[in-house]
Length: 177
Ligand SMILES: Cc1cc2nc3c(=O)[nH]c(=O)nc-3n(C[C@H](O)[C@H](O)[C@H](O)COP(=O)(O)O)c2cc1C
Image 1 (cartoon, helix red, strand yellow):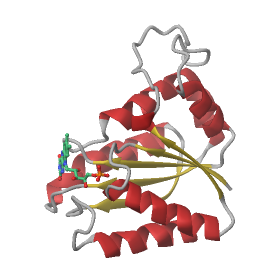
Image 2 (spheres, rainbow, N blue to C red):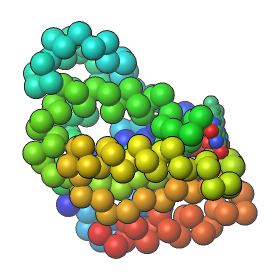
Image 3 (cartoon, rainbow, N blue to C red):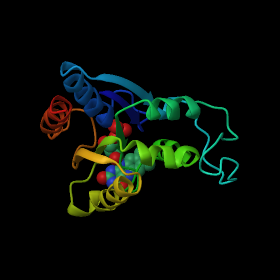
Image 4 (cartoon, rainbow, N blue to C red):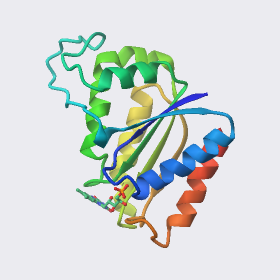
């Protein structure tokens, strides 16, 4: 498969990118091809809701997002990886997701396989409940075919005691594809 990975952390060696690296290692070992876009380091203007695209056309912003959208539409699977910021996606990756609007129907018709990786400091039950609900609705709305979710609670910094468990899960998810 061609797999596109969108990451959402400004920490290049942080927790969510650690899981991404393990996921990619497993997927590449299985012969899949990865294209990765680290949204915090790209030029991605937030959607301004002007509707110039009519949900199926060119966006008014000629930044890095058209290239990402072209790659998504050439891929078989999309992977989202984010640190939990106030119980949901980071703003950086959310800005990229909002820009799906200009190719919304095309993305839905692709019926892409998907996976989600998220890391949070806290380990209580509540910490992943908001993003879990959000992801479930996104999967349904974008017509994605969920291959797995790793919602890594209590993984707030590299080297945390939970790290090895989640790294193994991320590697196994990539390897299972
Ligand atoms: C702006 C901001 C908001 C955060 N919100 C939460 C939160 O709601 N719940 C939580 O458990 N951790 C929260 N955290 C902690 C991060 O989710 C956690 O440290 C994560 O491991 C960081 O991932 P990274 O290393 O990939 O950037 C927040 C951190 C920041 C900077």
